[in-house]
Length: 193
Image (cartoon, rainbow, N blue to C red):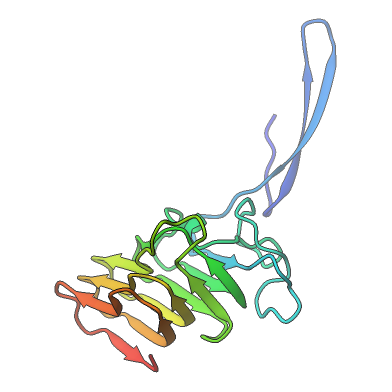
């Protein structure tokens, strides 16, 4: 049969009958997100939710990540899922990323609570050496705000990325550059870096 799903984490009950009239019933929770509108993604640590600004649940990369109570744990788990206009809220905590976070769509907002409490550390314990932090090529209208970025080769690397804003960032312990604006990147605004 057909079921209409009305919201995130709807459940569907299925009844199967085989040729010997044996009945099996199973209920599954269906997780999905609406791709017809820009989504808001949530990222949270696994330490505590007391004092968090946006999330009411612990981060887990198995979570869908589009509700406050079921956020993702890492930014890298969202790579490939972003489309134009999406926003990622990074709650208070330390996030160890094991790879560069590549921004693959225009008009993306990545926002922490404050650059003293939303900390992205790109030297994960499984990494042999530091990675680049955030990287964007051929993008426009990005906003990266209120984040501490540490232990990356380049904290932020823009290649031909225009009309973007970097605001209230604290970048430390980079191997090469804190911010590297390269190859025709124009009209970008850096505020309180």
